[in-house]
Length: 117
View 1: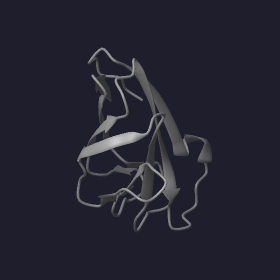
View 2: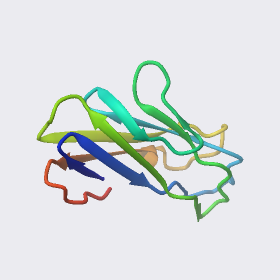
View 3: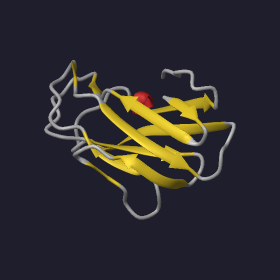
View 4: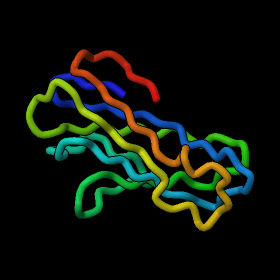
């Protein structure tokens, strides 16, 4: 994730740690500031009412990774920092032995540097 002059670029790779295969899942991304504009919304992603972005992961076998997803958005103003929360919104009722890893949060400073989570 990067932040530069109010533009946030988020790239994530969905992972299924198992033990079950997933026919599909949905990931929700939320920003700490209101979105002013979404510049790039990949296929399978949408902006529901109430803010944030929802993205389908597609099928994920147990122990596998999905295709990378990248979203470029502008937040309101030109903040010095932005936090993005990425979490599992829906997993089709799959067994999850570690629900603590269902949400990740990262804080990016307006430096243009890449922050990982």
